[in-house]
Picture 1 (tube, rainbow, N blue to C red):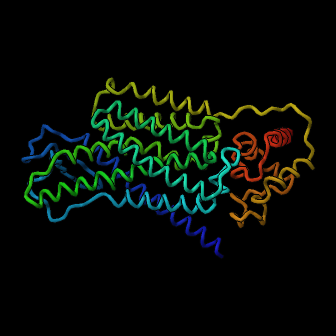
Picture 2 (picture 1 turned 180 degrees about the vertical axis):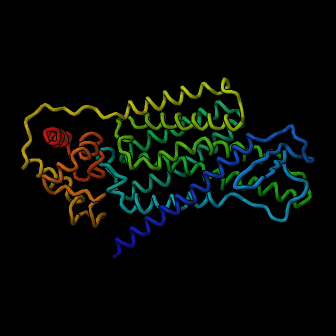
Picture 3 (picture 1 turned 120 degrees about the vertical axis):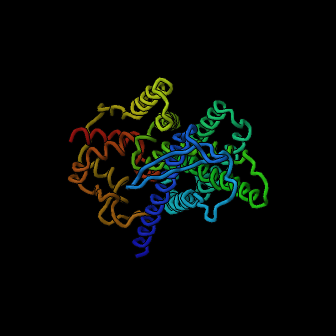
Amino acid sequence: MDVFLGEWGNLLLRWAHMIVGIGWIGTSFYFIALDYSLNQKERKSPGVFGTAWQVHGGGFYHVEKFTVAPPHLPPHLHWFKWEAYLTWVTGFGLLIIQYYFHASAYLIDPAVMDLLPWQAIFFSIVSLLVGWVLYDGICRLWGDRTVPLALSVFLLIMLASWFYTNVFSGRGAFIHVGAFIGTIMAFNVFMVIIPGQRKMVAQMLNGEEPEAKYGKVAKQRSLHNNYLTLPVLLMMVSPHYPFLSAHPHAWMVVALILITGGMFRHILNRIDMGEPWEKYGWAAPVTAFALLCAIFVTAPSKTADSGPPVSDAEVLALSAKHCVSCHARRPTHESFKEPPKNVTLETLADLKRFNQLIMMQTVRNKAMPLGNQTNMTDDERAQLGRWLSAH
């Protein structure tokens, strides 16, 4: 019953994470598109930077954006912050439930670094906080110099990716790259955007002219979040696709994902701005090339068929040693009370039924056993691969 309730807790937290995440991403996409679609030529009210006419759901909307702030605060001001806060809180909750409580299975791979669970958790928490401090320092250093700032942030994420892939399991590394970027995005809202907006409101309430610098910095951080959204989404679903982290230099796959997602987001933003294709069309081949490179480097290598044939008894022994603690009708692994994805590997019929799945997850991607807790060797993977190829 405790495991059952724990699974429901995991499901509800994941559901909540999706709900608030969709809300946050939706507002990010909407407001960036709104900014880019503002008409500065239309006759405007005093202090208005631009306007936009929009239609949705059978209604017409007329939106005005002030250059700095309106002359007077309205009685009701809508803040867009809780979507970001709750996305991070629910995401970190999932990190605790899935990766901290089961660190040995999901976070640690002794072949990468032989850590104790508390050490892995320590590296996780500290790296997320240090990442924010470094990112914030980079932003303050470069200010509004876009190119060096973008390159510095890219290199920071690459450094984090290299660190994670040399400390955690492949699955744990990729989810932490996503958490690293997600923390930067959420802290942008919590530590920079909202405090700046509060200062502007306070200045207006005191009868002062609000300082434009707060809005300028908030817009910059909001734009950063917008460009990081697509890469972080892929990182968050990466545990379902272990071929992403199977490459020996998985940080390179992260780089390609960042380029693909960031460039595609750039194309969409330029479209919203209404720019002619010749001004941003260069980003399309860059996006396609980066994506093709990612597909190429993650392609499974051909398994070696050379070697003595593997008997049915030998492959059952391999399965019993490395697989059935989880993939049995009654698992003995502490993290499971039923076989993951209903995959059982106790009999020859089971192994034949899930042949391609085993080949992909265990032989080629080396994603299984989880965290390689049973210390499956490359020779054993090769033996398993020869038996699967023969059947």
